[in-house]
Structures are given as structure tokens and as C-alpha cells.
Length: 327
Ligand code: AQP
Image 1 (cartoon, rainbow, N blue to C red):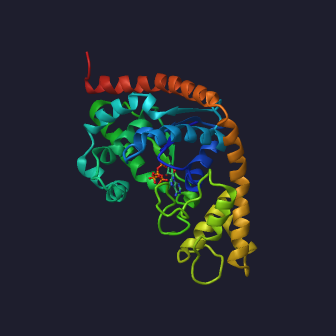
Image 2: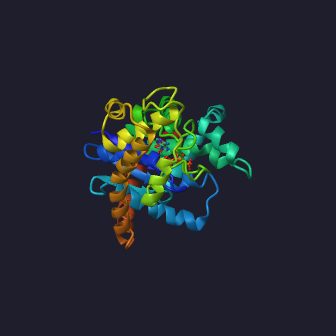
Image 3: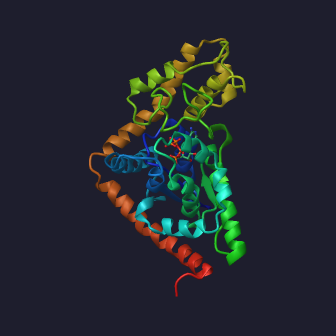
């Protein structure tokens, strides 16, 4: 049984990349592990958010966690900003984090280019807060998509550095990345990852998109030159569609290649849309039921906050004592 921590930002609409790259793994992991899944709203505000929309998205993400199969009897779910230990530990970690290491974070480089009103200190510091999120719970494994690997590596570096300087305090965590589904790409620009902040409305399949919208996005997905449905480095678009198909159907990629040998993109995409909908429609049904009243969501979040704060206070006190803070 491993201790597992992961989270998603309520910074927009959850999409199939978040589901395949993260939540789908969490649902499997919760059966045999001690899991905590967070709604990382403090990370979301590292880019500008409309306060009313953010508030709504926090409950939306919570309901989607449950609708996708996270079971609060097995895993704890809570909102990051409701546990102040995260920002407190982040400050302590800031004081041992090399500035140059944060400058090398590729997500910072990508996102700072998009910040029109100027890059904020929060965006720069985001990976240190993420390190605090992980280290507060003696986390052993962090299930994430490929884009977060560098941040988990920074977390490892900070834990090792802190332990070496102040004595054994933190467990050094490992990223848990499933190669085949670690990077689901945009349906319109398959060299970029599917992303909540993609300006192209056709690039991402959102978990709450209407079924006809999902079918339309898949039918309009770009393909590669040539008509062969095969997984290869030269066929980014079709390889991405095959990865999605395989993840939602549990049919292996070689089997799918065989099934569609000599067949056209039209038939392949129609079947892919059906396979995606067979996963998403039940999620949407459960989501609608959950949103009839938010009482259940609030109960789950209250319980998750209380339980996780008990755990994180132990590690935080240990870290503060090691550094020499307080009396
Ligand atoms: N395209 C993806 N393929 C596989 N995994 C993905 N993840 C995100 N996009 C993909 C994984 O989902 C988890 C939550 O990600 P996040 O919301 O914390 O932040 P993100 O990675 O920055 O997600 P987005 O969608 O790209 O959001 P924006 O546009 O707001 O930055 C992580 O485990 C991530 O790896």
C-alpha cells in the first residue's frame, strides 16, 4: 500500500487528457493505496481567474472526481486553499529553492509567454507550492501526466536537500507516469498537449461537452498525410487518436491497427466517437445527479479537509522544528 497524492486545477473545463492522463489511474489506485486527491485552487490563480467562475469550477471538479469513480470511502478529496499548511510549507521550501532551477521549468516558460499582463511571482513559484502539496502527506507516488514530471523531480530535489541539511523529514516521492497515456494531444494541433487553456475550441474534448459536440470534435480532428491508421512517430494525429481509443476501450493499439487495416478515417473516427461517449455519458449522468444538491459534495470536502489537515499538521510541525522556527 503506497501513499499517493495528486490534484487538478479548477482552471477551466476538465478534458479527456485530464481523465486519461490522471483521473483514470486514480480510480484504479484508490483500491489498493492510501490516496489523497486535491482540487488545487491555489495553483489555478497563478493565471487570472474570474472569482465567480473559479468558485463554481471548484465544485464542478469535485463532482467530476466523484462522477469519474473516485470513492470518498477509499480516497480523501479536499480543496487546497482550505488547508493553510500547504502555503506555510511552500514558504519554508521557497527558502531552500534555487532561483535558477525554477527558471528552467518548461511549464513556467510556456505559460509566462501567454500571461498578457506580465508574469506573476505566483506562476514562477507554482512548482514549490506543488512540492509542498506532495511532501505534506509523506507521499510515495504521484500519478501525473508527462507535463508534470519536471515538477515532481523538483519536489524530489527539494526533499533530498531539506533532509540533508536539516535531518530526515520528508519522504522522497516518485512520479507515476503511464507512458502510453501520459500526453494526450490536441485534436487540432497534435504537437501540443490537450489543454484546458487551449484557445481552439475544437482541440479538447471536455468531460461535460454535449455528446453531439464530442462527436463533432472527433469527426473534425486533424489527421496525417496518407490513409493508413497506424501508430508511428511520423503520424502524430492518428497516433494520438489511437492512444485515446485504446485508453477508453481497453483495446490495445496493435489490435486497433489490425481492426482498421485498409479502412478509412471516417469509419475509424465514428467508432472512436462511440467509444469515447460510452465512457463519458455515464460520467455525465452521475455528474448531473451529484449536482442536484451540493450537500453530498460539501460533506465529502469537509471530511477530506479535516482528515488531511490532521495528517499535514504532523509533517509541517516536523519541518518547522527541523528548521528551528518558533519557540
Ligand atoms: N493532455 C494531457 N494528457 C495527459 N495528462 C494530462 N494532464 C493534463 N493535460 C494532460 C494531467 O492532468 C493532471 C491535472 O493537470 P492540471 O489541471 O493540474 O494542469 P495542467 O497539466 O496544466 O492541465 P491543463 O489542462 O493543461 O490546464 P491549463 O491549460 O490550465 O494549464 C496532471 O496530472 C496533468 O499531468
